[in-house]
Length: 347
Image 1: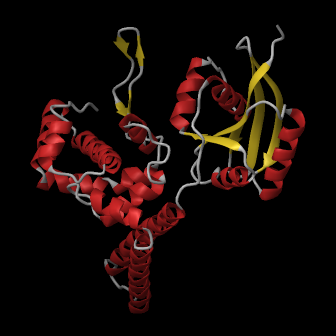
Image 2 (image 1 turned 90 degrees about the horizontal axis):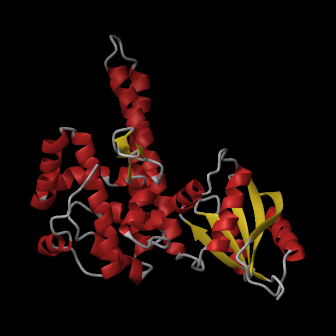
Image 3 (image 1 turned 90 degrees about the vertical axis):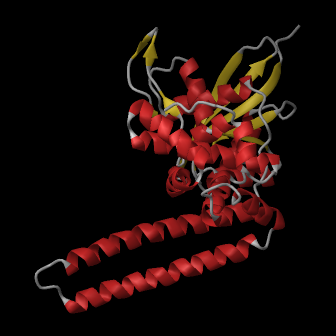
């Protein structure tokens, strides 16, 4: 019996300006051959050249799947282009590829070895088809990120104002200009929130999801919008562990045999917008919700580090948004205690 090709995968390592591509095939004896590699520009012209090349070097009678990581926003145009061209595509969380690469004993990580690993991953695993997320989620993400950047700029400007006011002889015209700049940014923030509110009302399912998330202690509309926008409505998330890893709130610890090589710490390798969005809500629930307050106090009593305890609460709140969204039930303290019955939080 001939050793036939039963599956083909196009692994793409996506960067801001280029696409590093590896094509692999899986044979009936389960052997893998990575047989073609190229680099293309991350542009529409590059997408067209990529698809034409793939069609020329692969077997059209055998399943072909494009596989890439969810790399911020850089993969999105390519993913939409491939979907519009009726291609099978899978978008994978970066943590999955990172964990897989560790099993391959790769000594040096480059764009080429990453593309090779992504192609292998696509050949070895049964992956879900990626579907276009709701356009509303993408626009929500744009607006919440714009607001976040605006607030960061306003904080810097307020610090400048404070520094100028603290001088021995402050310049009155400088103070006036700085104050006008702050007032302008205040006005812009109000416009963004107004636009965000109007956008949410255009999609009833999104509006309902935000209302549900806002039943969680400490979660307001802006935090709910951020988590839905940054996760595309939890599009790639299958469980709480994946979500915390995606946000960089997962705990990593280096071990060798029975010895611990380093203290447990947050990876901080995920979505910084999610981590930041849950910081103030975590402080709020520590003050207002007895359940979260109890977790916080126990953690501080255990290791004495408040920052680590706050990060644990951030993680708990983030996980709760996923549970509420998937189960489509409002949050209440008794339900949460049943669901999370005596689950220990480690950090």
